[in-house]
Image (cartoon, rainbow, N blue to C red; front, side):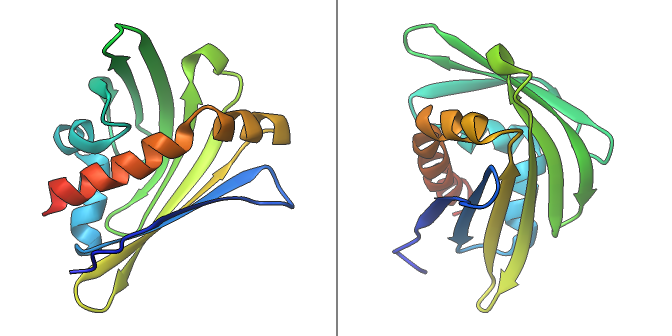
Length: 158
């Protein structure tokens, strides 16, 4: 088991995009399933301080999702999107929007690559509509949600 799993989050200097890379001590099929099965998604997506509820989760090509994160303070954060392509154990292409800024839609592509030893590399690429939208996403505390979410995903996968 790799005990130094690191999440890399990088702003692309040439386009308004964010690249996220993370390896997992689990096969691509398990990491993929944790992204498409709503019973698993609610166990890991987002920071530890928020609780997630799913209003809709239809993870297939042409499907969509809507979910809410609620903090201890009772503040709700609503998200929604569409699944453009689901390729089992290989790739997810989806849109992503935070409802208060629903006109700032990101197009996200996640690829699941098999590594030696039954491991997986997850690579995410989020293309935002503008540099200001991308920078606002980065400034929102997104890194906390991504890093803690992947730590929680490690726990779900173990």
